[in-house]
Length: 272
Image 1: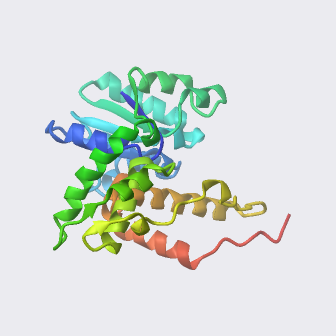
Image 2: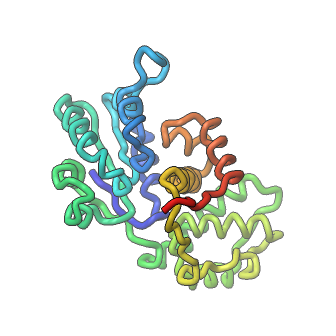
């Protein structure tokens, strides 16, 4: 099964809740974080070098292996992943589920993703619609999350009709995740009733400048990609610990990489 949808539409949340009650193991591979050096250890474990760390394939045995953000899989690893999935499927007993924020078939057309991998994953594809396509869903969604927030508040928070209307008028490119962030912001700023003034500033997506990466050394480009992947995973999973688990690294490593990225800025190469 394959889940497709824009960022923030709830793909990971839907999978987590759907699989939680089955009592079978679930292991996640964040495809964007895979690299040639760590591929074998991530999927198959470290063996004698670290007997306590098993691979994602073994961790998912008899349950579900989730390939998260398969559209961000490095093309150089597509063939190795395909061979691995064939072995998993041939052995039976383990379900494979994947997610992506963009359609996969165009990636096959431009050679980024093998067609064979597409057909392994997309026998059944479900697409989660963006929030702007389901405007009636916003109000009950906010009510559900407000109940979660109010459990930790000494004074319950209420949402004014003006607040809900102002939030609904936004394009919300971050979908449910952006709506949750707006609600949390209001919970911090408001007393007992959230008003439009308690919303975070609206983002002007068109005005965001595209950074010029011309001349950046490869190591700096890799570092930028790594920290962007980590930050997205933290946003997706709600905590550094959960993000580290999804990426297959320990939380101390994740925090060290985030701190290093703040202290070190890419420098342009002085050589052509």
